[in-house]
Length: 382
Image (cartoon, rainbow, N blue to C red; front, side, top):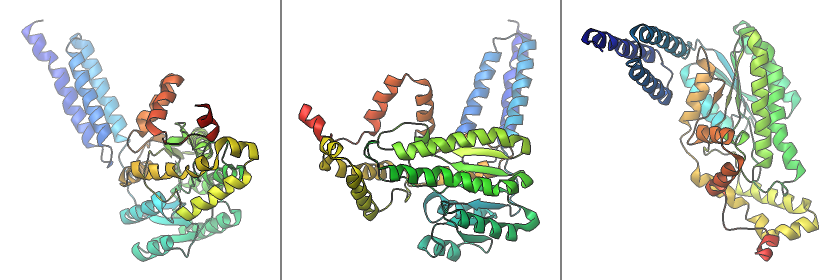
């Protein structure tokens, strides 16, 4: 390679890096640091490969990669808030409570649906947030409460419209083997985590279509990664994930963008209290047939609550990754279809999609199994 060609060839990676840096500067969405690193690494890798290409091809690929990178990252810029109105369900505690405060601080007009408008969570929101936040009584399993909340939102937003709906409300129930979970718990999880979100979506979609706004559904990593003890919860979240994917395609012609958030392990109040666990344990024992109860044994059944204690020790107390991703889904010019905030969430979702089933099952059992208990019938066989 001649000296002049070598000198010119180095121009390709130099231009790539410079324009790539400009593109990266346009990525103003907080919480996207990981993607910045990936993009920058890709630019440098591309620059390296360009050195082995003919000059004409190198320049062409250099300019093309810079253009595509700039166009993509420009789509991740956040739109101005301008007091855009957002409806959030499940604002009593957890993600919904924290998100309501966060979006209120950013200047959004926030409508927070809560299960108990007189509860401590609702009172705290009224006390600490601005006048632009409204607390709405909204049990999403009650069609009349959804209808009433819709009327109040329409009355307040009037011609400004509703920009986004964040379906956050959810329950987990008492984790247990799928055979042990009563049908009432399966139906309850579906009623809140899936049917409730669907009914809220259907009620408010005319407003979102008018504003060409955003629908954001909070699913779970468990909706894509099968894990023991979570048959009822995971099934309902998997349904919500698929519902979101279908609506993403259907609503694109209306200009409405749909995103699903699949968080990993974060510590919220979704697991409930010890009193709730005791009631759920009683429900399990009351609904089991004698032969199933004999095979599993009461000691094994009562030990299921240890799984919740294990979750609380392994989960992340910092909710900011979830809040930043939801903000991005609500505000970015071109939001992502899927987000997976939290340690290992994205990795596990990819792992379950591409790894052989046997390998995944072995790995997940090693990673998540609550040790120290076996059903009574299996202990006798050992």
